[in-house]
Length: 436
Ligand code: ADP
Image 1 (cartoon, rainbow, N blue to C red):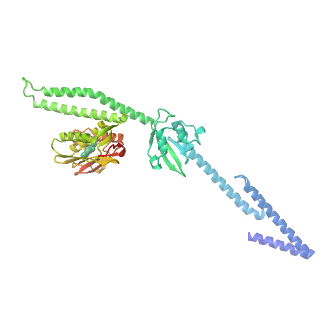
Image 2: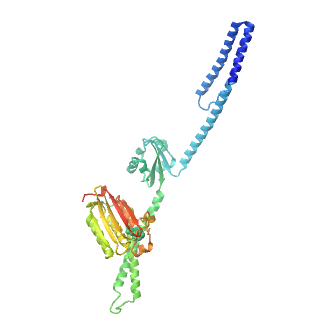
């Protein structure tokens, strides 16, 4: 550029010198001034063209220019082409994202900070019974009025990560899992998963187990009854001493039929815990309940263990006494069954208005840490043989877990192999009625 300026300068002064020689000084000054004005006017025109171009819509081609203005116009032209390519790439990428979100097997909804629907994919429309042409821009709480969903929207982002099970009123017969994830500037991404099929399978499974257990109960009771009668009537005047073999067979048959009976009863208990509505809450006097559990395990232990009961907790608890009796007695009987002779077992009830905890502590065989998180699964046993020998069904802790869930209580297990275990059922303040 300085070279072009130099040439323009030399040209002007050359012209000035020539006119000066031919026509004198005044004419030379006038001629140089005129030339300078012409040059400035040309630049002015290019600047005006550039300004006019900059005001036109994006994508308008850069005007052509010559001389000193050619390089910047060319550079601008290159830039504009680059920007156009980038814009096209961005649009294409945005479109790809939109198509991918539309093809997702799950529903996706974007809510702004006022819970207004900004965008949703067709799957979300189908699952929730919404229509994007009508519902985008609407508050989601006005469209989905399920109370549990409204409550879910009010929760913190961390809590919204825990899936909510919803049966949408606008799409009856469907079971959905909804999760929320916070996302740029107060927005929330709702992810909706269809669990209808899984839920149906789960219902079929539950009904099947409940029906089979139910069907088995009567014949099993009959078989057990006959076996007991047969055993009682084995000796008469003609046969004063039955053969040892027969006694052994009958004992084994009775043993197995009792075990099957317990299994069927536990399966029925579990399936009713899974399917029945939460029971009518009643006021439970804790002391008699604990005394009953203690009596049962004293009988089960038959003097093999030292059993203590510490009751310093609240006198009354709100819940189902039948279910809580089943849970407490499962925990307590496990302590007897997994504690060798001479061991100690302590049942304790502690706490106050804010919450209370029922603990069963034993000095038994203990459980290795790697098993702890699986203990409440159905039929999960650390040692299958030992569980069977001690009359276990593998369903006790699954029952405990369900009962506690229905009471909003939680189960904690601490255990050291070879030293003993501590099972603690913690109840929230809402279950506690009166102070001791
Ligand atoms: P089970 O009928 O086999 O006892 P549970 O569901 O009651 O079934 O318990 C599951 C498993 O947890 C048991 O098989 C046993 O291995 C372990 N377990 C439960 N309670 C205790 C305990 N107090 N001490 C040691 N192991 C235990």
